[in-house]
Image (cartoon, rainbow over the protein chains, first blue to last red):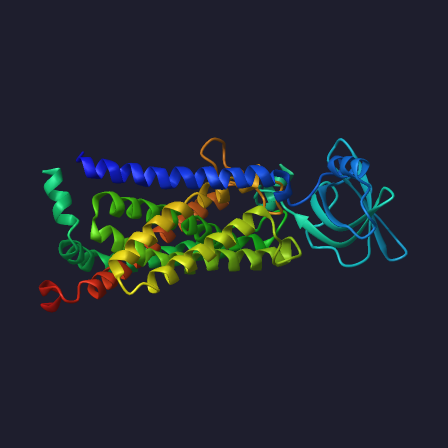
Length: 137
Length: 242
């Protein structure tokens, strides 16, 4: 390889390398701030460290605990679990079609005194796809 | 001999001649193939057990999202080739990829939003996957306007290429975003390391649609690069003779 080409190749690698380093440091610094939601244990822990004010909106994600779902006075009640800890959620409104016990969920709302008052509920589906008749087998 | 081949192919003139011959047939062939893949996916596959029929947008969303990232990687390669070997053709190809990349990325975001409404219950959330793809879209737009803002196009090629190399770091971030952070977006169904988590009856049409879409988009890139060559070399004698 000619000398000036080598020099330019080095320049190209330097650009990519420094960009990687820069972005890497930014992402490292932001780290968990880039998480879309907290799991129940994370939320409980952060609430222990710094008590969340009643106006702080947080996102809680996990699985809808089996046999925890019921409707009481037009309010939806269920528990979100990460299989270590779970948090009771109260919500008034329409649930997304894919809402189901044992399936992924993300709720947005306020965490006050151990109860999560959600004002938005999103269903989180997984990466598995299969036709309905196969599930029976 | 290989060197001679590259020298010949790398001249805009001979590339143009080859592209002129194969560009349109390639585009037409893969366009029909992609239509076939969509018909297969939309009408001849069973619904999903969880999502029902709404999962079928996967046959558009996944090829578009895949190509949105691949086009940027291709652009980074051609940009590096241009910067190292000073190959003009590489710069022309790089530049002609940007608008196509922007459209494909927009389509990926748009189809994702449509998919999100019935399944997640929302069309937009600032999770890591969606946000990094939006950054990709903005980067394509930035590259287009950067190139357009220069009077001196040779200078534009240089700055464009450097910016592409800086931006390409975003691609692994998009790819790994669903593993590094908690996201609303699900993780990958098809990976190199493990068995696909999508059933074969849906996997085959999906693979088919991805391959057809790759061909379709590269057909467009060929045509668009021809356009760019004509624009940039319009004062050369071989262009005047066309």
